[in-house]
Image (cartoon, rainbow, N blue to C red):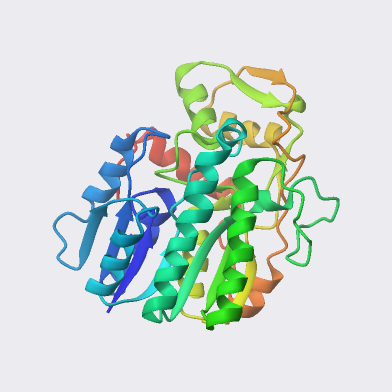
Length: 318
């Protein structure tokens, strides 16, 4: 029996794979190594598993139904962590067709294969961005989340709704996990933590929207991995859950922390926030605590200290 991780060479997928490997699981990692950011980073993640006979890395796309059907059948997959997606909220503003092809139709392919093979547990990766500019704080799963601000969260919300259909019609166990601002060592270079670290190291400016007053609920990668692993072990029918730290800070505070860690002064450029950007993300994680035993252990100060140490020491892969 195997666990299939789509997006398995990405930031979250590869960290999840390392954790599951420690438990002795047999894994299939599917990734298309797209060029949204430098594919060399994902290939370096995949290389961590090159010598392990328990891990099979497959280069392919979730939009290829025949491929994913063959993988699930051939490798006796019994659980799926579907993390693959076309990422990037702002990038999605001008690429709506691509985002829906990957994030909705690709997810539909995965659910169809899960239905066909009787998959025990299916994790659908979602995002805190589905909440949009809600006034209900902190963000709770009971919010309708029906006014996303860009195609990326719209495609993720659509996949959540499709997941309910597959649970209702076919009894598929699907847990949709809404990730909140994931960061840490080996993080994506397009995301703000790496951009601020680069600014500190290179003496370049960093752009902060709305005077640095946007609030973000930063969640350390290890806590996210713990949450996904718990969800894989708890088939619950159909559930939507927030996975986040529950302690947002402003971007000015975020940069302040990195300035202190790096003993540098970072030049901040003010710019108006794009229409895709909500003023805050703020996680109510009580449902995940209750149903999964989820308990974030790393606060943002400690998490950024770990991330800075990794960055300063040459960004070694685990």
